Amino acid sequence: MTLLGVNVDHIATVRNARGGSEPEPVYAALIAEQNGADSIVCHLREDRRHITDRDVKLLRQVVQSGLQLEMALNEEIIKVALEVKPAEVMIVPERREEQTTEDGFDAVKNADALKKAAERFKEAGIGLSVFVNAAMDQVEAAHKAGADIVELHTGPYSHAEGADAIDKALDAIETAAHCAWELGLDVHAGHGLNYHNVERLLRQVPVEKVNIGHSIVSRAVFTGLENAVRDMKNIVASAG
Image (cartoon, rainbow, N blue to C red; front, side, top):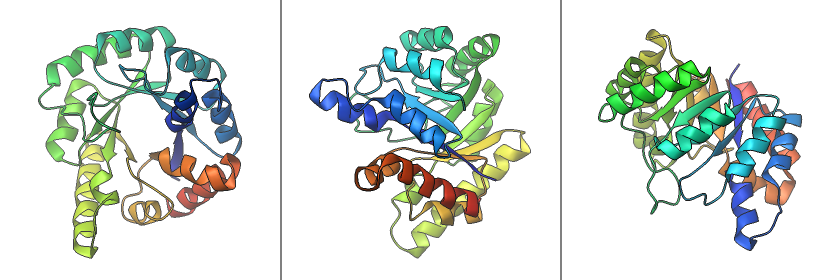
């Protein structure tokens, strides 16, 4: 059965918009766990635009299901990860100008840096996931560098318009997933997934876990976080 990781970054975004202390992303993580989340995800960006160092440390202390820390290959953030020791880290590309992660990490171009970081994480007992585009060369490069998991970038599928474009994007994800499985990697998927498109993805590509944030937080505005997480969990569990 496919697992659900819930990203709490956007709870922190709302908090930071007013510069206050609420809503509390740590509390959101606890609610998510109580309503079916199999893990909690947060992204400590270099500019700390949403999640802060304080959030990461508290989340590590209270999350029971497992904390995944999204991060760039930045020495300052690597040191935070090695100190906090989440269950796993996920390496993503990062640009200050972007609204959210726009593309997969280039594991081919950055193979040496990724391998060096992977050795440090392995020594610390931290699992390593790499967020990559759905391409076999990226999957193979992540594996060669020492990744335990690849998370396939589902943005092209989530934003595709028209049956042909959707089918093409799904086929690419499926091909990359099979490549990863043959290499012994776990396969996760994320970016742009929502209540309308995640079932179709999982019917064709039953990955081990999907990581979803924005869609859940958006629905929570109207239905409450408990219901939003529970509804997504039911969809993921029945489809995967």
